[in-house]
Image 1: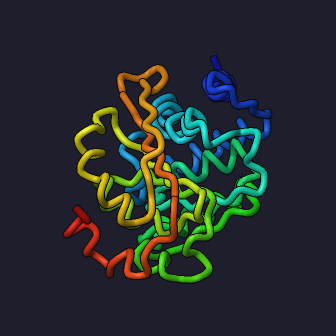
Image 2: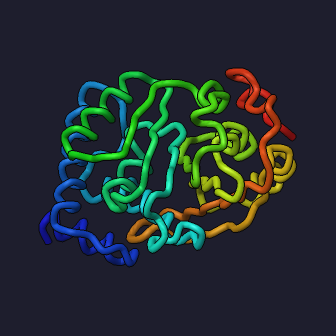
Image 3: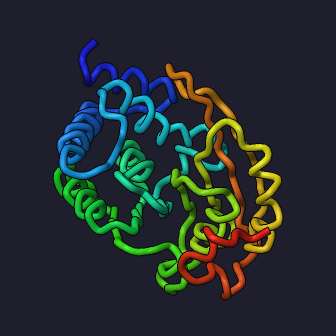
Length: 243
């Protein structure tokens, strides 16, 4: 099976229709990722099939979440917090070009790489910005402006919720990509989620296709505006998570 066919076959197993052009964009993204990874640390996973499964497919598995309805994505806005090498934001943009996507990362070198990817793949309605979630969540052009906030960042759910929920408009969702073992973390975060104006709406657990990894999505619906004091200043959400 050639590289393009491998991408197409696996993405279609998620019931996502994908064109030849989109498959080529995924392949180009892979090539750019591996090339740039030689000079800066973007990913520990570089083997082709592993990247497709553990980065691209993992990013797109969000379609398992009921509120992320493929038929209703036109004009929807998504912010990806701590996007790193562009996961899940870039795969989502390639697969669903109708989404408006903002990629936020605290490392300028990664943002420069993302801008190269955006330009090389000819992606529209996607912006990469350099900064911290604690700062951008206070800005009126970003606060409570997004239909979805997504994050694959490695942080506990209480901390991530403080970073992410302020970006979500009322009625929108923060969807956190997590490992399979989520129950204890979820219980610890319940009060923080409530303080921030959210409510855990769903937890979707699944094995990641053709891997030995268990994954879960925690879906937090924004029920009411987040109090102005959140997120707290840089460093505090991680150092002293809301209890």
